[in-house]
Length: 321
Image (cartoon, rainbow, N blue to C red; front, side, top):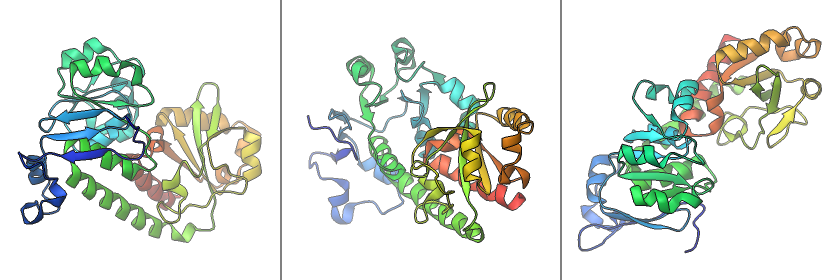
């Protein structure tokens, strides 16, 4: 089958007529009536991002996601998640997943090599896989439950829409997308007075070894895009894509603000305490002016949940500074 990389092709089969919901005329539910849409849109046949044709008889009520990043989309859509790859560590560390803490989401192992036994024990009625990680175990997964592979989306909006199309949460996706766009617009307005200030986004890769990376401006469109993001200005010579960084390289850019991403506030504190003893770091403009903003590592994921948290924290950090 032909691989679909941008969005799922979705055919909603309604009763014997087989008429798609969006073409059903006066009988179609009004926008925003999520329950009505879900009730009328089953069964549905999906051609996923790997070209598999999958028929779902009803809205799923027990979902397992193999790749941990899909947890944020499940949360945004208020989906019935019961298990996920790397669930234990990601939920514990990632602030974007804080609402899942203590909710009993089962860890099924790594995203590339999940425990099929654990997935079987969970008795899911839908498994969401990833075309980059799970192609070789697709047949094993679909023996447990209907399996849809996602991946290859250009934007978070595409991914949110595709995910919603699988689980019957189209109305919720549209609402969340509109809310996120409005948050970005409002936050961009609040930050407009900083339009000439420069921002570098750093990621602490090891607080013990004191290694850092630069997160590219294109990869962080939610931060740097003037149309789709917060409209932050990157320093001269700032990369568009991820790359390793040195203190000396950051000093050449000498940004007005540093957005410092870490696994935890403790890791951030450990790194900045060490940095205070390093002459290059201590002499950075942002450090001398107290313009370092802590961001949990999870906000780098680019999901709507991550964008929401990043926008809130960056605006709050600017106000405090």
